[in-house]
Image (cartoon, rainbow, N blue to C red; front, side, top):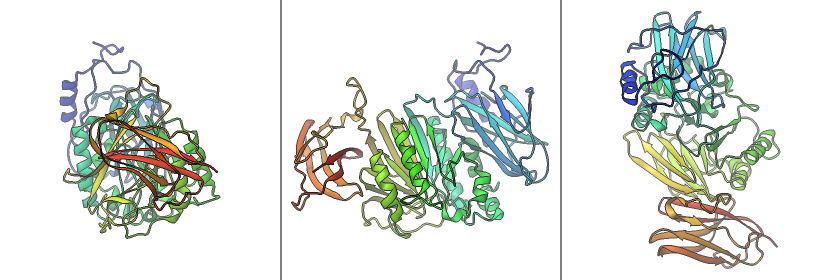
Length: 517
């Protein structure tokens, strides 16, 4: 069966797998369903004009040759029909980029020249079909580098999977172990070959070209290179990343200003905060973040920054995150804030927001204190995180380099905009408080699918528990209780915004409730 171009054949999943495996080191293996190949050529937007496609021999395994200083890596530019490729040579030279739906690279070919005085090259492939897997090859002289990527999901997608981690500085060998585990994970589940979020501190000295060469872009650690050749890399700025000049050179995201920006990826909206540009009360960045979170139509919202507001010690909790960022997270229903800075894994739950510290990407590990305020999980481990969004259900796992899950949770989105015919994921539901807003008392109902231990509590906007409403074993069915506006100590709470949170096992559901005078 042809794909709309004479002589071009679609490959079955089995044939494609064998071709990818034969293509050499660094190729991510993902099966493409037969019949899904697009019938149009990809448009091109590069630094030089495109050329006709010609066949070249497949890449050969081996160590990084001298011509390539930084091997090809992927950056998602924010549009689901595009993907950016970046690399750097050791001397002047032109390169060839080829791409396609398999390792014949039949969709396009282009020549590139240096886009800077330091022999950097970049190329943007456009006209991609959202969600489709593509293979690519970069050739300079006799050296060939291969990889693959999945175009970002369609705008209307309701499911997606992705990775998150951070603080990769100082010890590239440890980072390589984490990267090896990430590669192993997306090979086991090809739906995870999407992108990876980093929470910064990529290198120990971000103002030093030598640090970028030796710690992050080194060819001596093949799993880092393979991960970055097959997963677009989206990062915030860390304190060790310096002034950000080299960070912006190697990761030229579509910044709104400073080093902050946002993007959509399937059903998820990501906002990336720059903590080294003013972001507190009255700042342009905080105004931008408020507008950004308030204007997105995506159900799921995630914020990424470097220094956590709630974590398990070593570096202190960031009070600007607590006072300026947290109220926006609760106001606009952000479900996860990813941070790093502290080199371990920890999770704190504040006002229904999961504050995840994922600082175990390679930097020297610290000892977390699980007794710190609002912390519900902590582990001294090199690790990565996975997020699996499926409709109203989000499942999170933190996984160490040996493959053991060190923490997990599931959030059911309490989106009241869904129709009555939509099935409640997992059978758990937390009903809207009624009345809401309220003056004296309000009724809260919840549904569980089976007998389980449940906790239903009220929290304020900074995550302090105000009132425990239900705690203990409950039979399956729908239950209701009344919050009378009192705290656990019996005093009446102040008017304002609060959150009811239902928890049972790994399931957590939150809803906003407002008390007025």
